[in-house]
Image (cartoon, rainbow, N blue to C red):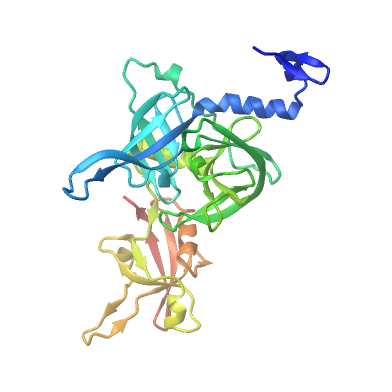
Length: 350
């Protein structure tokens, strides 16, 4: 190996390492420890012949990064990374490629869990290197963070920065439902890094990189990661049940601001339908309907949930996310000129 050149002549690799600052060495250590935990995911789709309409070969339609969760072969990534895939191909460090199947998806939180299809003669415990899970409960603004990804299969990349904000809220690009307590960072997160880990200085996972807030989609210094405490809850449910179970009322409601447009001065959520057998229907919530003359009769307007005012669908989802299946909640309902309180026992999204 050629010697490293300095102003005073060549130096050995050991001497070069000795000149690293403590901060630089920490960054290198975090990168080396965690690169085996980061994979490249290729989203494949079947291409159809435009003349015969026969299905032809599989072609790439998207890509992203992923994080090895355990030695059973589970990989965690973003739901949008695998959207519309007919097949998935996962590349580990060392260019080993394996197909993967989807175990389940939490589109509300932009989380997906994959299962690697590895030959039985491979020792997964030796070959797979799961990320070390940290916590997102006590993060501080200004704390140093590291984002690792495998964008476009160009080997692993590292970007560094700080936590720019905590407790942020963004809407899922899949369902529009709010994701609370999101981590904001100035560490560069490019589209190909989606699904990769956000790490603290100990190399522990504190979030999964998910989004860049800019009109063009290019990095603009404002990146977001779903906190690991939310990720852990979703992943555990997906591995156990194949899906995430959330509490529901069982209603459909009108777009935001519809109530104010229909009834000036009133704010709340207009119920369009309370589905048969749903918690809301069983509690007596009325949906919007037409009378015998064909005139529109507005349904109930939900104005408060457990004593907290709700004006938009985001407000309602936020309160539901703080509940569990089977909870009894109090709905304040405006029904015409009457204010009604109904007790609803929340059901399951299944």
